[in-house]
Amino acid sequence: MARLNGNWQNAQPGSAHGYRCGFCDNQVSSSTGLNFLHLNNALNPEALLRICPHCNQPTYFRKPAQFPGVAFGEKVLSLPADVESLYEQARACTSTEAYTPAVLACRKILMHIAVDQKAKPGLNFLEYVEYLATNGFVPPNGRGWVDHIRKKGNEANHEIVLMAQKDAEDLVIFVEMLLKFIYEFPNRIPP
Image 1 (cartoon, helix red, strand yellow):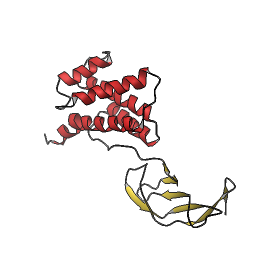
Image 2 (cartoon, rainbow, N blue to C red):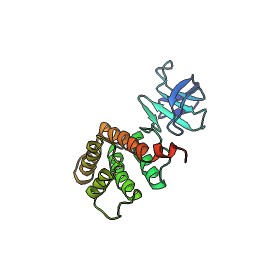
Image 3 (cartoon, rainbow, N blue to C red):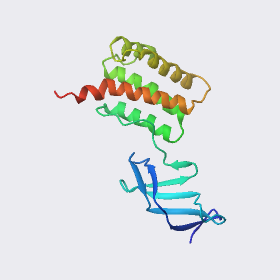
Image 4 (cartoon, one colour):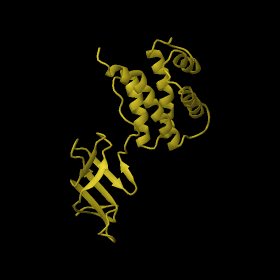
């Protein structure tokens, strides 16, 4: 048996453990892997390693954390490559508790959406927000949310302040809705 950090040892293969895989985003249950037991408490594993039965990637659990973590939000279909990349970066940031970069990515997504929807490149951020609002890309009653992204993004970008989990998750969920409104839902209608 191998020791980890002088106090841990590998135990027998573990029992089934249900989780959402941070690699493939599927809800799974796996008993394939190892339990890492503390020498003084062999009945209660304090760390687990499980192999996802869907993608075969390893996930490490050490109470209360999971590595890799699960990205907040849902995938959005029919996105331009640059917008999709930024959105997935924002989601990935939430999985590692990098909330300030997630907020900054959400801010940047608004700029990319505006340019993709024919706004002139090189405008300032407020002009991009105005373009989206005045050209019908913001749903009814959504202007407040776009302004919230602008304010939080400016705060994260221009002030010495860290964003909280709630800030990042609020912005990711709104951006997700906006992306579905602009890209995914229109592309679900057959030509």
